[in-house]
Image (cartoon, rainbow, N blue to C red; front, top):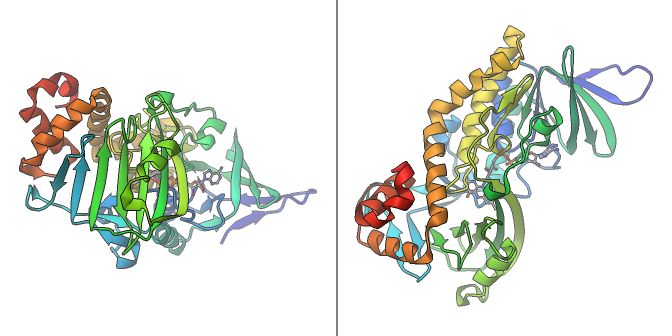
Length: 403
Ligand SMILES: Cc1cc2nc3c(=O)[nH]c(=O)nc-3n(C[C@H](O)[C@H](O)[C@H](O)COP(=O)(O)OP(=O)(O)OC[C@H]3O[C@@H](n4cnc5c(N)ncnc54)[C@H](O)[C@@H]3O)c2cc1C
């Protein structure tokens, strides 16, 4: 039960908890879920409803449910993916599926509204309290931990906590408020935009379009969502793009294929693609998910890293409460927890992203030509890149660092 502390003369509401999580995305709710096993946990979320509006293309691979330690229910999934199409600037299509890839592990397009709510409900079952419609404003350290000022609807409130988990996306204002600089360098801040479009014919297939003609510094996607609608979106790097993200998306949907489709939802957001923060912790603070820049730099995908970092931070926060040690010296253990799971993959994908930035449209066309006829061992990003270099040694200079 949430503790409301008497607040002296004024009428401001004061709350007290061991662990305060800011943001109820997958990272924050999963952190709360694990922290609640050993601590009093409160989550504050600025939105009225968890998971809505969605700011995501919702693509993940099957493995996410192993990491989540929750039963995979069909209601979390909009569409199961049977194959992937990679499309080069010259229109060459590379189809990746069970025939071409020995160890095919299919992907899926989630229903994030349902998925995010399901994780939050698991956290609630473990005893987590939630304050919705409550926006984090600032935090200040004191002798007992941290005092947070927040706005619940129109009302000012204060929350006293020992450990703060910043799950508020990039750049984390929670971290900034406690003195950590989380500004994402412009070179690594992708700008994403997406339309939900319907009606349209869809296949159980993820389509990815590469090249500056589609989306400079990023890629364009069409992800099917149910029977006759799709998430159509793209990410661009402002340092490479001459126009804003919407310009490129509007150009993309001028294709005849979208002639009768209507835009029924628009969402946009920033995607940090520079790799995780070196120290996503400090006294009284742990950062999870996008707030700690835990995003795959090559794909821009961050749901599975949000789940993983959320779990580790939640467990560590509960341990910190049990040991009454909230110092950076204790919380640095966080890096020993998440690194074995994801560091290598994120690091390699960062190097791959840097190489990808150097590719010309001509390079991409010749890569597509190679992949068209290639059989692969697995469909991991790295195995695809290795296969490309073995057939196009000329690209070794551009890819060299991570192969
Ligand atoms: C256009 C786009 C497409 C994407 N597509 C994919 C994809 O297909 N696959 C994939 O894996 N990833 C994708 N991503 C990335 C993915 O959405 C994120 O990595 C993921 O949501 C990170 O989870 P999170 O919990 O860290 O942050 P979020 O899901 O962003 O949650 C942060 C929460 O904090 C809350 N919050 C923020 N500030 C405050 C505040 N001051 N006070 C209180 N609450 C606050 C927000 O309301 C939000 O609920 C995409 C991102 C974008 C922008």
